[in-house]
Length: 94
Image (tube, rainbow, N blue to C red; front, side, top):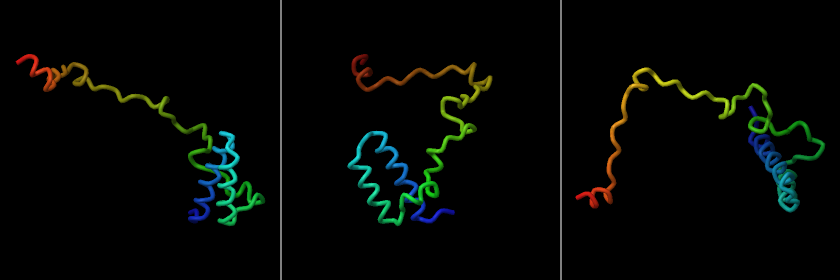
């Protein structure tokens, strides 16, 4: 299990990578200051690499690949009840 510092360092590394992609050097420097405060150095590169949500796993299923649940035969033949009228529609009709 990761310690609190390791978890924070991993989160800061993900944040720094995002700022580097967005070309925001001032924010990168702020994140580097926080990493330094937690004891992370550039020599540690590789030990605290971001993992988890940012790791590319070919077996990971995405929302686009998730199949929709199949309808049961009862659901296919069942008719929907009529929609309720809004208060404005009731005033106009009445």
